[in-house]
Amino acid sequence: MVNLTPTMAPTQAYLDTLLLYYEEEIEGEAYFQALADVAKKPDHRNKLHLLAKVERHAASATLPLVLKYRLRPRSDAELLSSGQVQARMTNEPWESLLADMALTYPGYIEDFLRLETMAPPEDLPRLRLLTAHETVAIAFLDLEISGAPDSAAPLEAYLKEDIIWE
Image (cartoon, rainbow, N blue to C red; front, side):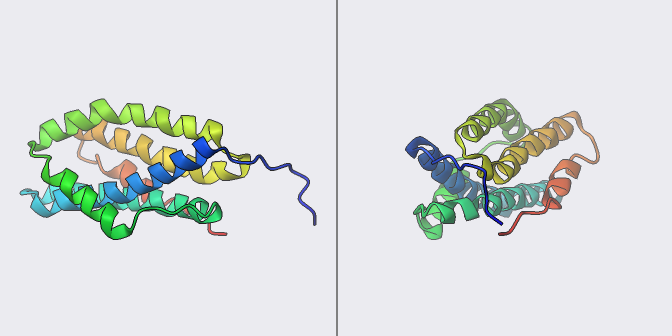
């Protein structure tokens, strides 16, 4: 069967942004893992580990696009080190960390949606998983800040999302 759907050639801006966002997911995973390693409360540690898994899940969803376009991310070692350095510079109590994240993360959704508008249509299913990871992180933050006992539920649901493997 012949694919009659025309494909849109990706722009350099799209490719550069895709690569940057992929790398940031790897850094984000390392960031949350490093914060979890020093968290004093088991509940906080568990939630930080979940956030790290969400970052990995988002990276896994976008990796096939990175490979498809033969993009060259920085090495995992460099990205992990960068995320760990960022975590060491974060010396906030739990409540302040959450408040900062709740202030910052909505802007990331706008960034991810902008990436979607630049993307060839065939890339959208994977990019929507990338955008969704930020949506669930914000839902978690809202629930956690409000004291909801099941605040991790959005993160856990996202981790059950199937990643489309080609």
